[in-house]
Length: 418
Ligand code: ASP
Ligand code: MG
Image (cartoon, rainbow, N blue to C red; front, top):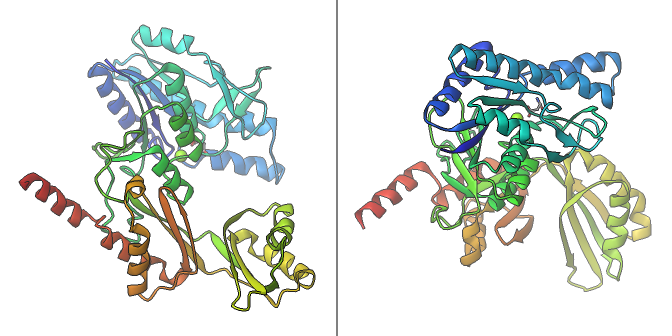
């Protein structure tokens, strides 16, 4: 018998009919002899609807009353699921975050979970009930309702799985797993059967929005195996764990990309100690986050060019700051480009294989794609290119690194023969 925590997102409980389908699935898991804790999101669109109501009254509404309001969405879906389970003769009981004491700090709208008292949940599991818990919410020490930030139900599920020492935490969503890259760009993209926490964090922070990043971090910290699966189709989904052995033999696991960044450049600055500090100091004072940085010294050895990337929303402000400083910096030129994209290869296989970066650069050059910036970590190589080459670059790399369905099938066939 296994203890499983399952989380169903807003689209999975988007209508009464879909809630009935979730009940069908859950009762099947119970019939197969498992103990189930189910965490739900609000019905699709509900949190946005509630937020809209609040903002009709106060445009920038936040704070305590917003959490009292937003937490109602999940209360609706948990009650409906329990009704649907009872109808199937599957005993179930629903709890709000406060009722099972999901204790958080008091930062309304973005609270952090401090502790979970699993006693009430365990008692109900022992009485053969499915325990259905409202995601995304908790209470602070004084009993005030709090919420965990958008997408927070993923975090609730992982936190419960940790507190209850569950065998697996399953996140049901509208995609059937984590893919080698975005299937909208590369139709050959393939679902990964396994991926490590580290890789998932890189993929998630680079814009593969399958899971809330905080939930992945939490699962990694407490070593809770996480599985992403579709609530609409059968399948094994993608298992996220520490295991590296079974992670497919491929050198890289996936290709992530983002169009969220923009490039800023300060050219021809006299090269002396403090250049980086004088350029980036005012940027960070303005609370603008910098991602990649490249500095190179000009051929004369006297001036330097300094290029970095920021979020696209910060581009104009960043450019203004640089322009207002350009006289002090004695820069020859200040400029930038909004139309860039970042492509990253991600894979723990990189640790043990040299030559991946040079292969990446060769593939891009064969496509005539110019690389503007490069950054690497142990399990990731990122390049910045012109945005118009994004699709071409992703497809060429996906193909060259054999990530597609066809090459995976070929590899399997070969393994079977040998
Ligand atoms: N209902 C909340 C939201 O829409 C939490 C969640 O779905 O995870 O952000
Ligand atoms: Mg979600």
